Amino acid sequence: MNNKQIAGILHSLANLMELSGENHFKVNAYRRVARSVENSRQSVSEMEKLEELPGVGKGTASVIEEILQTGRSSQLEELQQKLPPKLPDLLQLPGLGPKSIYTLYKELNITNLEELQVAAKQQKIRSLSGFGAKKEEKILEAISQYQSRPERRLLHEALIVAQRFTEYFEGNEWIDQFELAGSIRRQKETIKDIDYVVATTKPIEVGEWIASLPEILEIVNQGETKVSVIVKVEGIEISIDIRLVSPEQFASALHHFTGSKEHNVRIRQRAKQFGWKVSEYGVYHPEQENTITFRDEESFFAHLQLPFIPPTLREDRGEIERAEHHELPILIQKTDYRGDLHMHTLYSDGADRIQKMAEAAQQKGYEYIAITDHSQSLKIANGLTIRDLQEQWEEIDRINAKMEGFTILKGTEMDILPDGTLDFPDEILQQMDLVIASIHSSFKQDEQTMTRRIVKAMENPYVDIIAHPTGRLLLRRDGYQVDMDQIFQTATDTGTILELNANPHRLDLNDELLKRGKEEYGLNFTINSDAHSTEGLEVIPFGIYTAQRGWLEKEDVINTLPLVELKKRLKSKI
Image 1 (cartoon, rainbow, N blue to C red):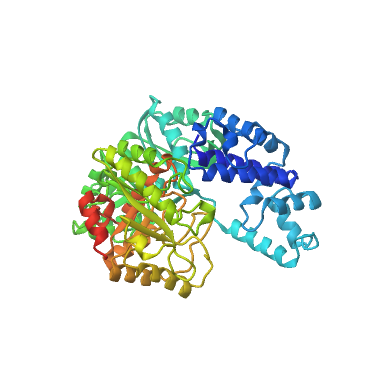
Image 2 (image 1 turned 45 degrees about the vertical axis):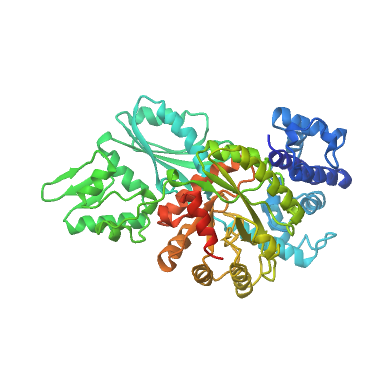
């Protein structure tokens, strides 16, 4: 396990200890240890004496040892059994910490969100020590915001579940062909449910077999043409709809159930121009009184005199018109990607050493990476001082001297301070290969202030990239208020590159902004992992999917450039 994973378990343990009323000195001790593990520049799994870490004693060392050996904490599991099962869910409410939740649990016996909402509406919370009427109102606001979020899952979570069922379907001899459909096939950033189209001549048997799978929590519907179930895989609960079709109907059904609805409406309108009717069963020709079926989707589109339209484009954003004129974009592919320009190491809040990150990237076939640890103002992430930076540069030089066919670029993810000033002086920035600037504080500034803040950073000649430009966290936090047209225009004027952060919790910029930035402003973008461990490098495909949804081609993304051309592009701003 890496440092970040160990620290995550320790933070969870501290939270549940506080929820159970544990002595606050002990709770704080565990929080300090979690931070020590998180900020350690040495991998904890490689340490001979855990007590060398600040704040770690015999007791906490034994907890870490157990985590290292088993990947779990028995102490954490005991607390999970002891506490009401839905009490930890309250930690998801912004502004409500473990200490406050414990008070609510102890004084009012509140064990879940519904009980909290009732108590707040009945004004029972304001009289508790440390609360008051204002905090009670904020709790109601937080609950309202939490409940208003749609019942959706992140794309990467849905794909974890889909992978399990894909493996099942691959092993079933009654299934001739199957494919993911719906929003998960179109690679939308969040998913309500998972759709499959399954071709079989034995739909009843397949339906009964699906209903018997161990991950099924509930059978919502089971028939000859459709099976709907609620499943749970690796703690992820989601609905799956499986359409059972004959093999000859598979291609038409796959197109129909892939959607989007808006795209399908346009396809039906096009078919109507020829006097035909499109459905999930095929294309009906009234004059011949027969329904044409197809061997694949390419044949389906060809019948409508269109080239194949990739699923990621099927949102009725102009793809039909472009297809009619054979002007669809040649979408960026994973194989076009040459290097990752945003990642963190043990120097700041990452979990792995520079060498390990570089070796993992080289194994993925990359030609280069940039090490971009946090800057000095972000103390919570162990941000680097100028002296730390210089030490890191020396290490990068040593590693570069040993690695063949691979280059590590010297960079930083530098804080844009609330007034728009930057965290390092220009004389330091000009020594770097690459400079990323980003927002990590004062998210609630008004639109004008936030826009001016980012624009000021972009106007610095040494700032190459603005990372996660809107600051959103999917299903958790809306982006800050910012005038994206002004950001796009400034990017055009200054040559600053905007990031598509591939972390599946961010995917920032989103597909619609990417498309607008490309088509209206002619912008280039960069797709990066923002990895904090070698495992974090694996998220790049989510960035590629989002880029495809934004109609990006290879030439729109600087990570597709060979190293020499990349360096020229980065220097073109100065």
